[in-house]
Amino acid sequence: MNEQVCAVVVTYHPDSGVEQNLAATRAQVQWLVVVDNGSPEVELQRLRAWRDAGGFELIENGANLGIATALNVGIRRGEALGAEAFLLLDQDGRIPEGYVAAMSACLAASEGVGILAPRMVDDRFEIGLHTPRTAENDLEVAITSGSMVPRSVFERVGYHRDELFIDQVDSDFSLRVRAAGLRISECDGAVLRHAPGMPTYHRLLGSKPFQVANYSPMRRYYQGRNIVWLWRTYRKHFPAFVRSQVLLHAKDFAKIAWERDRFAKGSAFVEGVWDGVRGRMGARS
Image: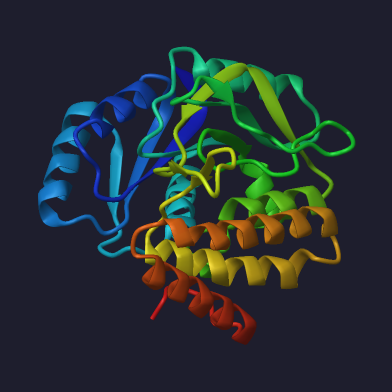
């Protein structure tokens, strides 16, 4: 068990497999704070039983306040407990044995690191996920899940931005860390398996198969809105990264044509873009 490390896990409609993920995390950290984002009562009862058996803290938000706010609630609780570093995870992340020790060792051996990320491996295909690099070979941004952040970083750059709700929360925090002169580094000794989205594969006129993500209309709304926000906020300071994100979202929007409920998803994305132009942030009304 690593002293002074607090793990923060955000749950939302957790299934039975989450219990094992929480147990694997609890065995490696001093504190585990689980923040539930509005799961129904039957699922909360399950979480409470796991809490009683597993010895972690459970904070019930009572509504879906967004991933950014939920993370901040857990981090503030960890600060009150005395944590000096935070391991941030989603409910689907099961860390392997020795993960926190490896991350802690990497963090202790590094200078100027604001976010430490593991090596990410796609659990479906056993391949490493693409991690864009800076000219100094640091990461441009870090995925929140699996990352470790020193307490001092939140004191320096602030917490996750509540009004983003979901999508670009990790990019915004990463860019603020870099703007403060801190690095985003990767720990070779820590590997986290990840299965992003629920992709399916299609062909167009005999072309190579391409992947579509199959996000919900609600998620498409936040993607459209927050990419506009990212462009307006960071286009001058991180132009290359912002351009790459805008292009990625434009391509992803085009691929909605191959998804189910494509009209609802496309409409939600366009609504999000319009709200982003108007500066409407926070939870979708």
